[in-house]
Image (tube, rainbow, N blue to C red):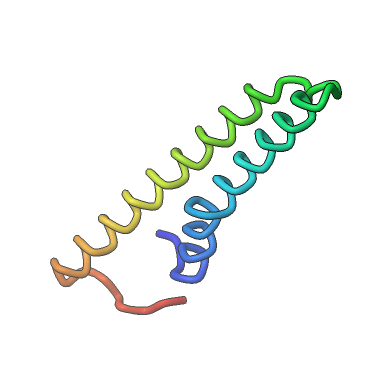
Length: 82
């Protein structure tokens, strides 16, 4: 089980950080290409991998959260936020 603080950091990375990074990366590549500059090599692949990472992290956090709340409902949780 992950701590509450780690969960919060990972949650913000998954819902804000990675999507921002992927969008910014692809936008910069598009602007460069549209203005006649060489594009960023493998930009589409990198953008796709960032989306995959965000989706995987979000899924793992959702499972962790569901497990935590299930244990709390069953009375097995400690109720501490280390």
